[in-house]
Image (cartoon, rainbow, N blue to C red):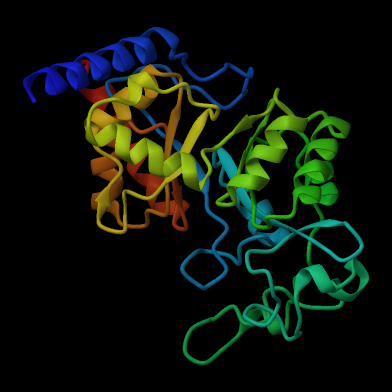
Length: 307
């Protein structure tokens, strides 16, 4: 028994040593996201989350939302993408249209022309029982329209479909619009993000669902340094299914290995402060006004402390 235990221990040490030597940091894709000088605290990027439930300032994935967020000078625009029956990429969170529009059906079973007859902010709630966008309809946007309208704006694009053809199509559009170094592509669907990386290895990606699970496990045992991440960003909540994902040590380990940590979806000011203190790279929020105000206050405090 003693010999068996020694053999197992030796095998573990050999494996850990091999992984330590073989591990590589995330590949640098030349991502051009905003960077801010160190000014007493690590300023996170303000990422406008595309909320479509009424928690945010404007209905997410709409032109009004994107224009208003750009006017507020947020750092990054976030959006969700599905593919239509006629192979167009459109901005929408759900795979079906019932929750946010007056229509019915799956996006994958509808053409772009059919979808553009709908008001994607139809059920956006106002005060009381009002629905302000029923008098101010918002038409569904294509990825092409967004790239044309915001050619230089940094973006996080989440593929909400597992269809590999959508991943291929997004790759082609990024090349056609010269957006490859201004975008992080993310997806909960591991096969979709794997397909995208095959076609667009030069574009930064977020961790897929399988990779987030491995990150959580590796972080728990202090072994993230042994991984060779294929992703450049972790787009994660602070915790998931009872597992704490964002801690000072997990943030440091990821960043040291060339991986950005961008946390969703944070609307509470106290939680924003806590994450800023941890040094996360970005905060996705429905309340960009709160986060921008908080950052301005922190920057002013740091400026005053220099005197």
